[in-house]
Image (cartoon, rainbow, N blue to C red; front, side, top):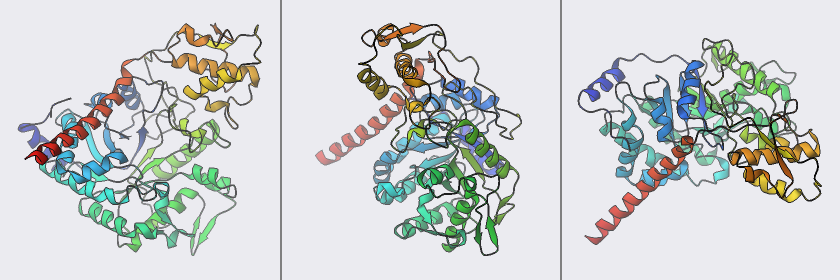
Length: 485
């Protein structure tokens, strides 16, 4: 565990900076998720961010390796707290103090990590959670705010709560309102955000609107114009983002906070794993979004006033994510897992196109494929085992590898497993049905991957888990101590 990096003069520097630093301009940032089988070194990812001049990054957890890599980078950070930690942080001010000390204070100070926001939970009001976290949010926020005050960080680090767009609803944007069961908690939240100078963070996904609703007009999901505009009084909406955003504006206005700053915490388009999820659609959507935001067009209810910041989801593909929402969940990255750009995209940050990660350390150029000289009749169980461990989502309907034929499907499954096992020759046996080749079996848009060699990248999540369990153990022991007195 890192010790706090700022004491004495460091406190004075940070306090002075929080008072005199100018307000940052609106910017395009990215979500950096790490739920992947093949992880790049965090330092490689930070270099990728800097090479592409990306000024802001949103993290879903306080992973030590990631935060260490961001120290001194100048990149502004939003660090997340998982929903499962809300109960502990809300019930124990000491737990909040310890979390802040381990995951924020330890990395800040002059020349340290530039942590600007702490995201308390991730979409905790999501309908599918059935209120599980609803009453845990404000207690956690209040304890963490006191922890920030005690650490002299309250003027610099702001607390936010990323909300899913299902927190509000309406047939027309101007009639937007928060779900009735959320009115009280959201009112408390926005009062807190307003009094502490924090924005409202919302995640908006036009792709999911299209994916979940067969009647949703496809062109309305993009920014190229639509034959199905939404007319709301004198306002006309030609894309789903503006309509959704203004629904939130109207909902905030009903609570008396119509001018509250808004940050888009997640928005993007997947490039694989479903019908409509492809490289072309992802490029068109993300470029349209960036041009729309950076053009300062605003929306009908907030003309010429775009969101404070927009965090694209996501930076890299995450091949180990749950596919419960859909196979596309593993394909949101503007870069593939190894930091290679999937398509041309101008982030309007100084470069006209994305720049690839450098010095990526790959495994040798070899692949595991189906042995053409063997009878593949009994291969189904081997494929099932391989795909239960490795990522085979591109093979499914709508995926980029769906049309490569039966043997191609078998080879893809075998290779995905083989690379996951760091090319251990035994992992390509499959009872004699597999064989190793040095000829790239990729076909068209279907890429047969080669894994990366970095082994230290797996340690970050284990450190995060260690910090979590150490928090729990600490307060269990503390409780036992008080009970024995």
